[in-house]
Image (cartoon, rainbow, N blue to C red; front, side, top):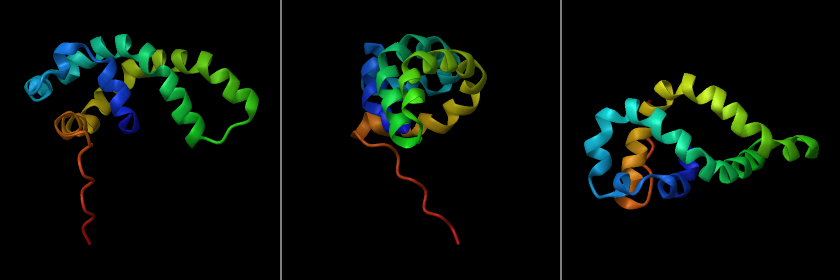
Length: 110
């Protein structure tokens, strides 16, 4: 998801893109995400398909099926994994909205 911030932000409702809106809504992300993501997914799905094709080696027949299969897979997975994913991406999304870049990765200790 972090590689798709421009597409995800573009797919968000206008109110969510207002300065400071995301920080104010941060405590509500676990509740809002299940409502917003189904509306956003059709708009970001073409990008998601291409990013997955770039990352995951697959035969041509499988790549050809991705546009049809991935939306169905995401419809089944997202309700079960959102509560785990949202806390992982929230700070990065807010950082992206503030400065056009995601949050910096933490420096490894040791």
